[in-house]
Length: 379
Image (cartoon, rainbow, N blue to C red; front, top):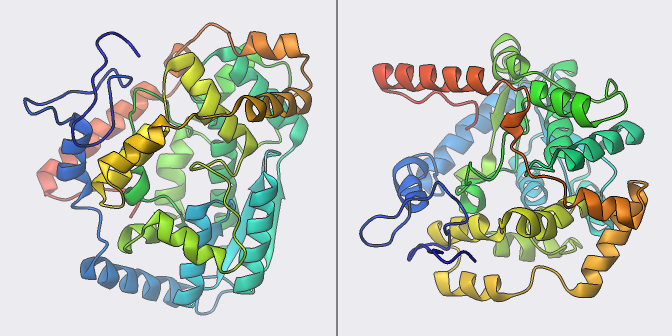
């Protein structure tokens, strides 16, 4: 930790986020953001139940003469798996998509099978072209940017949008939720949905084509899909009293296998979060996730501090994962270790749509203020 390290007295966010600000009482800006911005949108109560009921009715009515009411992305992780159980309870008929980018853990594969078998759904698995995914992941490692999960995240969401349009579906269900993901230090990562940035990094550091991958542009993500195609992303867990630990216990009844920390159903994501980010940038992804759970009342700050005191990796587990990654990526040990020490850069060091994004967001803020309402891509 740096000499001037400081930690919030309410959550566990600290000065590894260079943009964090503390008030006179030692409470951080993330906590104030949660109180002022998140709470009005988070409805784990009767308000949420009513809003959820209305949205379910809308999806059912739209799908009444169609094969599907909505599209659901299933990763094998806790959030999407629990959401799937709830969707089954709602009586909805989702097109269930799993995007295989080559990094599924055994537990994720098992969880996906158990979920679809329990729900009685057909599973549509979209397998990404491995040579191209491999090439893009290598380009990202060479680039030295923080968010190494962009290739996986982007192809996952891009695939959902494309399949939704292809099947005349208007609602994309997401397991994203404010109860465990409300706190997100923007200084740590750049968006995964900037296709221009992805292509630029691949041109600079890649050595192959990524034409087979579903890369979508900023314009498609922010305008074409939501406006021209009427696609809406809906997050059911924001309208339920979602508790991650309780969700895991419920999922275990149908054979769910725990895989460790949040989002570690992907072997690459596990390594990225547990080693790459802390080792190279000093970012511990447990802090925002635990802080979200503290602020949403799921755990105490003391419980979070106990979890943070645990090592991210055992020595043997780290070496096993390193060996697996470098073999799958086709690298020698020396090549792999050199990539892990590549010069650090920001995603914004490469061509991107950042300026356009900032313009859109500032325009949105002005419109919201003038009209007195919120304009959101997600609900």
